[in-house]
Length: 342
Ligand SMILES: NCC(=O)CCC(=O)O
Ligand SMILES: [Mg+2]
Image (tube, rainbow, N blue to C red; front, top):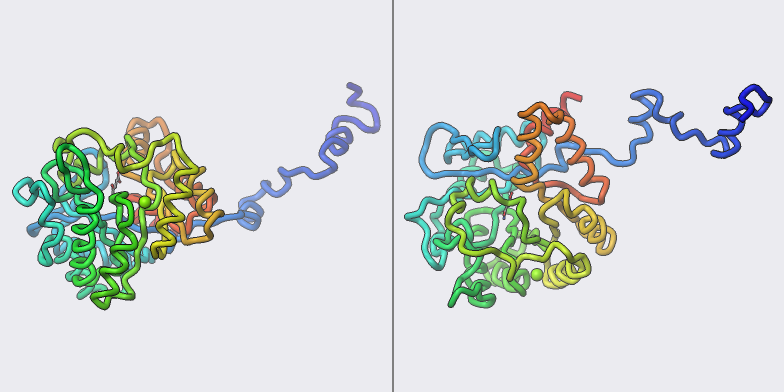
């Protein structure tokens, strides 16, 4: 190579790249901001919040550093915080003690259960914040499964009947979005019917369309009190992680059945699925950055192995880049604060 010649290395690189030196646009913070293709804002975040019965102080969730279970009065403070930070919606998850659990998850359909009372308290105090509730029986069953168990199997249709009643009590309590996370077949259509029949035409459905049987839900089970209850695993209803075409079929069904929004869960290990569903259907498509994803980042950060704040922002941006309309993430308040400070 003759670096001294007219062409030199610069000329040769210009010839090779056609003079399009892509680093030009990365020179300054302002150029990087100017050409950034996707952005993240507090309005992209859904904050999953754990609520417990009783009053008083926040209870730390040991397996999710920085995450707590709020008492009823404190969950209202969390809703105010969300409002002040520009987070549009909270997703509520109840911590359920053993005495409130049974084989059929009966507490799920109690109009006065913890989640319904939390919805009522938030809607009274901070009506401008959206509230989403999870439709599934796992916080309420003694076996930790999302549906009804018969002879060791999770039965679909009988579970769907109970899930419809669960969605109805949530809607009656004032919940804005119901999120069926159970993965039973046909539940979106049945829930839509049940809501409409009772006059809840405006209650939205965000279906967990593609929910995979995953190792990344571990810490959540501690947070809601299901950790050592679960018998077996959820692979007969949650999806196999080898599949994407099946996720398209799942999403297609939920959309045909009346889902207003769809979700992929977990998040980061399934960005390909998220990207495909978002581009295939053009529906508002959400990612759930699960407890295991959150705690993975937090554990590495606590050890000084990664920069937790940067990993948080990078992963959240990845969901937007893959086509997500928004992200359910335990980082929501922290990320919203960081975004507002930036
Ligand atoms: N239906 C809600 C969940 O299963 C949440 C799981 C997680 O965050 O790990
Ligand atoms: Mg389905």
